[in-house]
Length: 191
Image 1 (cartoon, rainbow, N blue to C red):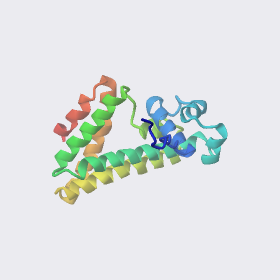
Image 2 (cartoon, one colour; image 1 turned 180 degrees about the vertical axis):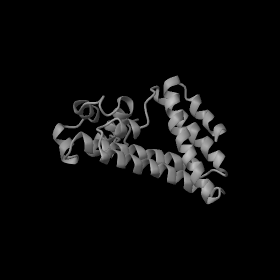
Image 3 (tube, rainbow, N blue to C red; image 1 turned 45 degrees about the vertical axis):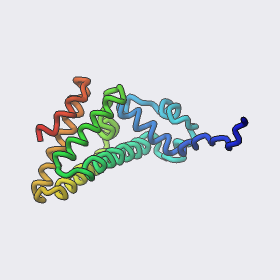
Image 4 (cartoon, one colour; image 1 turned 90 degrees about the vertical axis):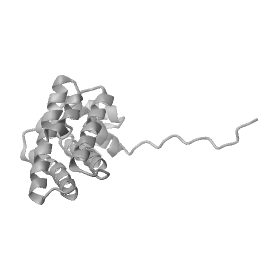
């Protein structure tokens, strides 16, 4: 019998700007800002050179800011997905650390924090540092919101969110050094 179903459409490729941002985020988190050239980003994104400057007039620095923002947004989504269904802050923290550990395990690579490796390892300029501070404060604010929502007093929520951020950043580096996601899994016990 002949199959009369219509042919399946191929998935529509992402817009060029999105491909550039995602490729840059991936490469910067693996090798840092200075370890990646524009040609590598363009090749990974499968994008023509002119498209880079069309979407990012200042080139690599504009792309770095956009890729750090995109990566930060992915972390914020992960934080929300971990804490929103949780019944306690500890439960949300355990879920987030488990999800981050799974990302480390599934990637098979030990890449750096996507914001730090892009903006702190990039050009030493105040715009990069301001943007990194804004993104990291967003992570802290999101965790603070969930801490308060899950029953911590406001001042405790602020302190707990900051402590958790410090633990995550340090844990991320230690996990990279030891090449073990178990470091991330152990963080909630320290809280």
